[in-house]
Length: 299
Image 1 (tube, rainbow, N blue to C red):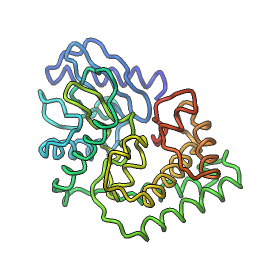
Image 2: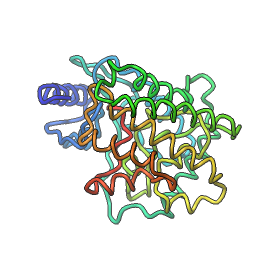
Image 3: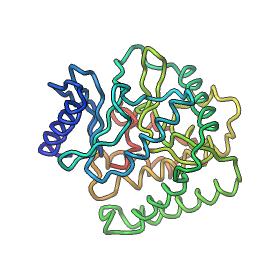
Image 4: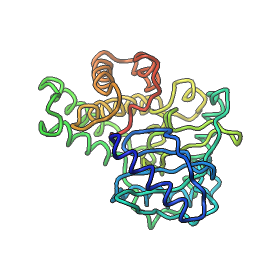
């Protein structure tokens, strides 16, 4: 969002909160990407704001309700109002519990235990009536970006051919393994894990999809994977490569707004050409000025 849109988005969020009896005299921008995350005060609510028509908001709210009932370690919707998606002045607004961050950051052991709890809970959640995408849908979107020069005009021809081939071969390799698939977070990297007084909580549920557990593990630090005893290391390696290839494709998409997005894209392409070993997202981020691994975001 540009500055003008941010101002309007803040007004929309505070207006929605106030209309629901939640006093919102001020807003602090916590994160800015394809959506805006705001801390509204004095009601102390987290508002997520996106352009109107953002259908993933309804998907996220519905999943959040079901995962909460299953006791999954996820961020909760704001309990003082009904769990709804609100539309105001051209924006979609959802309201969530705000968690005061705590230190130190989540340890690898706590991270691994929380992810195991999340996956266990997800296996018990009934989502038969919810259209859950498969991890291959994300690959198909990335393939579309790479295949169309109008969507990725700055991607060099040699890189386009390399990335296209790698996306296809990795998708086929992973599907060929025939691994058990289940509901996943989709992007459980450190940027989507909150350290709270209640332990680690996973946020940004709009990325949930079906796939092998190793696809989720491909987003987390190696120290976390080492504490997951039943990992198929061969499948994990393939999934790590696939995640790098998908995210690299998004970094070349027209309109990508990730800060230093091109640097991330170049580094991921270089890593795909030079590996193995295949680096984790936090390793890539560490190479680029110690940034948090938000590079998985579509925009």
